[in-house]
Image (spheres, rainbow, N blue to C red):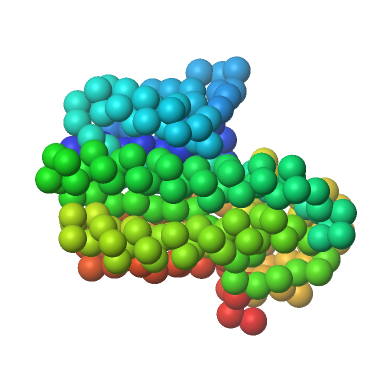
Length: 241
């Protein structure tokens, strides 16, 4: 990834932070974006922005290009929220918030980055974060708003891929399963959580943010130069059952 210019949203924690670190370790210049940053000094350059605001996204993508010395040619849309709420209890505000962050955000940031690349006649790679929840439902963990937003991310990714191929921009997605990040609720009850892993995850363990980051960086790299429009499950085999 030497010489690449990367922009990672949701880089303050979890998969976004792991991906930013991995990109930097492989030689990319990296700018991280988040609504808030941890108290400890992050190991990357940071910008603060709300990905649901068109104005903030536009100014942040331009500022990132200034700091990187050119338009970002790698974008990882990792900003997201996860909420559990049964459908009958789900409010419109909860639905709207989840859709805004998880689906509108990747659209706004992706469009801004792609426009910059197209204007400069540069190729690039976008990786969006989906979820296995976009592929399967689970009555024991009701989150229709989250599931629908991530299904939208996969459809958005495919459309990015076919529309922006003419500009040399590839777009792919990863679909993490149960990953040990701050958003995970599975292990709030360790006994029930372990039972779930043994019954529903062939590898019988949680995944790590670093394992997801490795796949993201591969998809953004020249090694994946003929991959676009795909969604890769990183789930310990759960969607194979």
